[in-house]
Image (cartoon, rainbow, N blue to C red; front, side):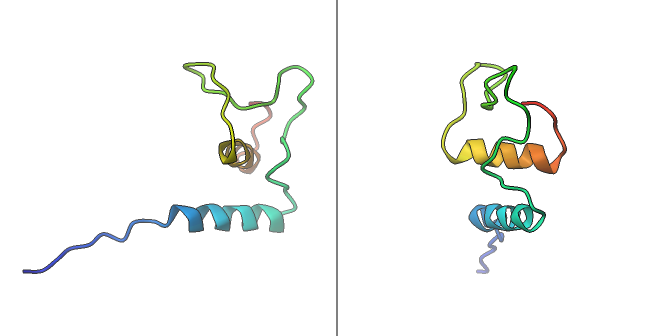
Length: 72
């Protein structure tokens, strides 16, 4: 009997690679990429309005910067 195993992507390594890539590009992933004067700048769930917290904030800001978004 053969066992089939799927190679799952290593989520932590992917995030680490993205952080390193952002840093090498001169982007500080822990800094909000847009002007926060009009809104709180904190990413929130569009359905519930709940603000994200912890590492999710940095990951969402980093994603926004990588995609050139200008607002949350």
